[in-house]
Image (spheres, rainbow, N blue to C red):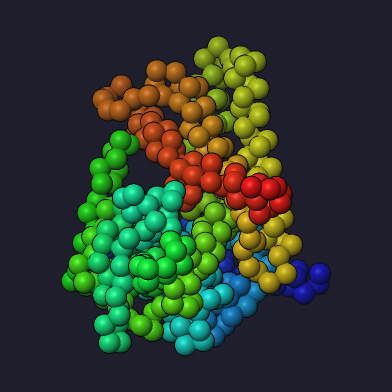
Length: 392
């Protein structure tokens, strides 16, 4: 305990000295993408300083770009960052998804080559999983990778590629043995997005955004050395990556991305406070229920981090976190919209504040939360089979 207290004191002092003003408080968080303009030069300074310290990926070993922190030290670091309003230096699918997967399935050469690059934030990452006709039934994917000397040539199409047009790297599931049963013959590669033969096309969404893409591959190249895990055994690798994605632990323990969203209580006070006639008992019960459940989820995820003996994401139990968090996200955005009355559903016009317009878009985009990253129906099947041990 004394060592932990010393670690906290040293961490607090270092953060106070090295976290620049432009990386504190709500605002943009660096994704590593060179294609997204930074709102302040301090964001790059903050990323570089934290990467040098090993604190963009604190629990990874130093030889892989991390600092080798224990789970308890990791939580302490996040707490000290939150105390001074420091934003995370880097949040992307490299640190949260493919990096931890490479730690488990990659060979030593891949770990030493790829992981430090991820830790330094040298490029953003996107995910090549879903295809037209292969969404929830992902094992039906048809995008192929054919051996060609020291490389593989990839042809096909992926869809719902989040941030494909602003990412430098992709991790992808492809079919390398078309004659094998559908769960076999799949391999997991990483590849550069900045090459001929990779064409990400943004999709306009109902909420006005277009971060999703459909991505086409026409003889795109993935090096043989960038096959993660065994050839034709990528289904196991791909499933494990989804557990890292679904855990969401770092985001909740660290307090999110740094861009503060207006909360349910804030809206209730602003739109149903004493000046507005007061909040009725029905709204009060719904607000209290949401806040208690959201807080319980955060505490549960924090406990999972602290009880982890090796800093690794837990297994099938992450599906529980996915179901609960996405249900709560839909409840939150719908409750906020309802509390605002007619102002909670504005799309454009001078009669609405920017916060109200942003809230409408969040309400619409949250409808998809229980679908992406594996639908909640699939997650409940996983919970039933692999957590509770129920028969098929």
